[in-house]
Image 1 (cartoon, protein in one colour):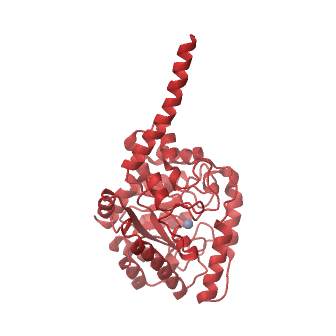
Image 2 (cartoon, rainbow, N blue to C red):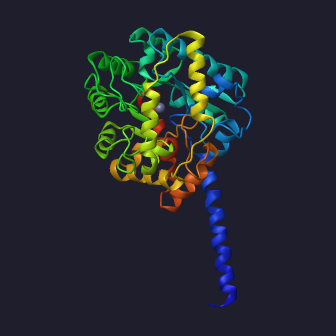
Image 3 (cartoon, rainbow, N blue to C red):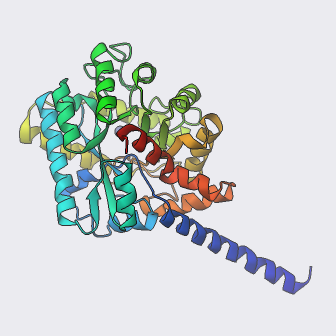
Length: 386
Ligand SMILES: [Zn+2]
């Protein structure tokens, strides 16, 4: 081959790589990016994080949401399961207040969203949409009235359980005590359907998942789970569950945590979850809050090493597409609530690199936009009715 033609080929290859990333960035800016689970509001509550500034710690802030093109995240109001009864309700209110302070302080940049139409409108205005989700169902203190009041506070989604079983739903990381959902648990699903709140089946046991699907009349989401075929981990979904989710019209948001993505990290992460689930602090009020804060900082201030990479995240997306179809996969990074992040996907600003990798695998722009948020938007519209 002549020397000049090699030079031309080399230039073309380098240009193509730059062009791919440019194209990916453009797609992410056009798409309505919805991440179905981030834990960022805890940094606001514990460290008074100013989300309008770009940070070098945490995984999410406004500048990085913009760079990643993920302008509509679900902010999780996360309540550890050791918050029991009215203490759990109190915790939701504290987190809801932290969220409100973010919105009030930055009303030129972020707005609460209650349905899909809100997200489309807010996206057009160039602002960030904040969707609210509760993690998890124990926070309603077994009281349908409290569930309804959470809805009135703007909450549009709730995981039924967390690391431990609650009084009406079994968890994937606890010994079964109800054989899935109790009658009251089924009533919670019906009431969420009626209100227009998304039933989130991340964290529940397999039996709870199938029980919830048998009861719900609306699509559900697994807001932050991945595929068990690729990482044998109880929080991930089996292929049969993925197919059932597709029949329901739902979406799984792929979790970027190392144990979710990589088999090499699954066992270590399972142990960490079991240890965390076993915590049973005594005390209430500030003493309990202090304990929760110390645990959070211990777990999430410094990232653990992981074998997982961006390519693993792509492989999980690919797997859901093969098993359940392109309409049933989305993003549920769990950023700011995971102890390790994949190489190449260290924070939300890296999302265009994921898009570039999907394009390289042959995904069309339309398919990529479904993955980035189109599928989640469809479910939100189906559940809220607008
Ligand atoms: Zn979670």
